[in-house]
Length: 388
Image 1 (spheres, rainbow, N blue to C red):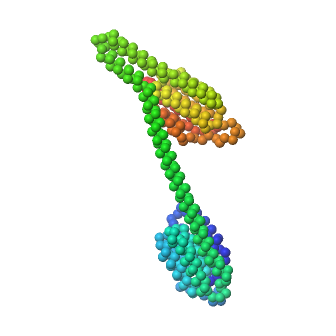
Image 2: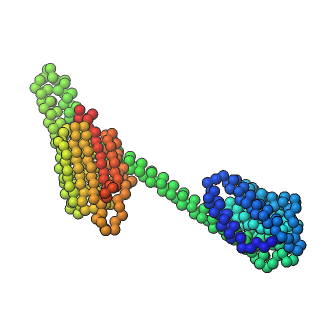
Image 3: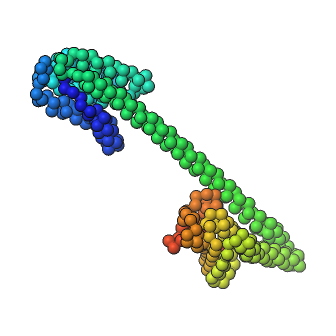
């Protein structure tokens, strides 16, 4: 039996590297590759010069060499049987005093079983391997085995077991981190879904508050006017007048939103944010729901600028077209050298709420950092079908 030299640590590192590179492949293919490499290593040692008392490799020795490395292929499903076959072949091989050193196969199998098996088997494997190696070393002729060989062989088992334990703990920690990340992601998705539901309910309530009263009055007065149109023209005229007054009142209330928006701008300016308002186009008949949702988008976007952007200036651009209303809110981002990280796309309730408001009307929404710096929120509300 030749000396194990100090290749044990190197073999463990190489084995871990091979498993790391081939980690995405079939485990049986990985184990087969490792077993083939170990068998080739023993075959290369079979031609070494014999020392006194050693025997050359015979057909029986080659069979035993196969039995030494073959359990690497079966250790995942049958760890106890694989360890038993390997250690029995080791002792028989050592009794034959063959030239090739069989210890590396024992180290690798110890590593594999300690990594992949249940805790009890993983703890028993290095003890059994150390005992079998001690017996096999005792069977060698004098002069072949030295004190260094004993120490290196037993240390090889310890190193293999410690390497497997280290990797085992890392895998367990990684699995725990993955499970925690998946749990947090699931919770985040659930929270986002709840936020969407809450925002939709809020939108529905606001739209109801805006138009429900006026539409109820209009519906009642329309029914009255239709009923008395032929018999009581004066009352029908009064009903039409009530409808006209109610409609104008509803439109007036919605137009006040622009004034509320300007008031909101004043409030954010008091908070230290300068806001520029740009209006493009002539305001036409904008549906109340669109008007309110556009206002809410501007309100939320300016709030986000104050909270997250570390910017001193923002621009609110309102564009009126015959078939759409577009609002765009941009900020300049933090001042150069302010030490504030660049703005990133948000995923909180504010972005969700704005997106849902636009989606209710079938519009287009976009939010994200600008190439030149700062953040941009753009919402386009179609009004053709409603206004037409």
